[in-house]
Length: 341
Image 1 (spheres, rainbow, N blue to C red):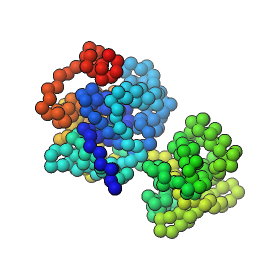
Image 2: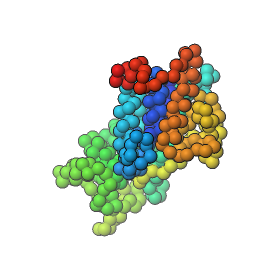
Image 3: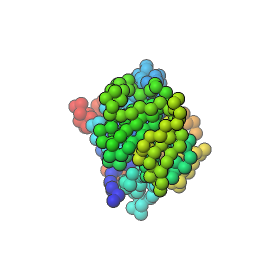
Image 4: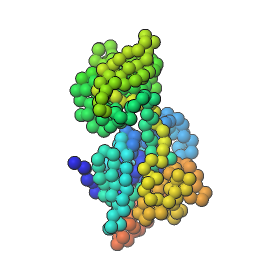
């Protein structure tokens, strides 16, 4: 059964621009649901350079990608946005009443009056391992994200990778898996030190297996895995497996956005500079995903675009309501919304 959700605005993309859009929309009493293909907020900032310094955010001589994400999450918390991680919007349809219907690959349906695309350069998509015939197993016993933990309950789980996602899911799935094997090409990990220490403790206790090697070929039938062969220093080794989670990194692609009937400019969404609306009224694009004369791909530019977009979105959601522009520094009403009055 599909899950159906109705809201004012759906924001596609949980990076800095998408998160700040939630803030600007929240100030105008618009309820947001945020959908992102990653398993956490922050977009490229959190996924690709969480500890890399950023020097051009106004008011912050230096802040890391993760620090900026954390601050934005605190800033939008008064508005209670709802997040839907590890899923992709697969379709967008204009409804007869002017609203929109969106579907995700997690079998969800959203109806809303405004769509904000803040997907950076596109959607992050998992890199497929160089394994023959792996596509036949995808979605059945090979997964690139965990959407339902119960899919891995009482299964022989193999996780391949050495970053945060691989280690996080190793720790989270170990209590419910029948067996769990973590495989990495070397005995050094890019994940948080605390996660690495916890993983190594589980190995020492015999609760999970750690294998240093590279994936070779898979065995199974009708989309269901039975075993995976790995190349190690000791030679070929077969590991029993009914579920495989390969974390081989991410690549950026425009994805399904290109099929939504929006005018594009070099694979970017063409928008106006008054409200950053696309060629489809009610669909806005902010941040690196949009294109207009003079565009600068800067986070601060996306923040500016979010502010103007929100004013236009309010007029669509509440066409009969008089909109009075207010400043957070002087408006008691806005300060109450933020919980600081």
